[in-house]
Amino acid sequence: MAEKKIQVTLLKSPYGRTQGHMETVRGLGLKHRHDKRVLADTPAIRGMISKVAYLVKCEEV
Image (cartoon, rainbow, N blue to C red; front, side):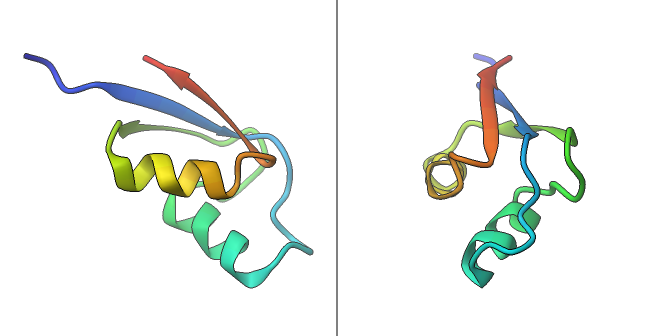
């Protein structure tokens, strides 16, 4: 069975946000606005996305 994937897109800049949110965005592999990454759908990744949900868009691939 294939592993589920999700595509995460950075919509807003993390600059000026709390240090933890900036580090979470970097942990997701996002550097610039409109940057996209396809990541494994794991509870850890879901937790990181929920922490910075106001900065990113998440779609299932």
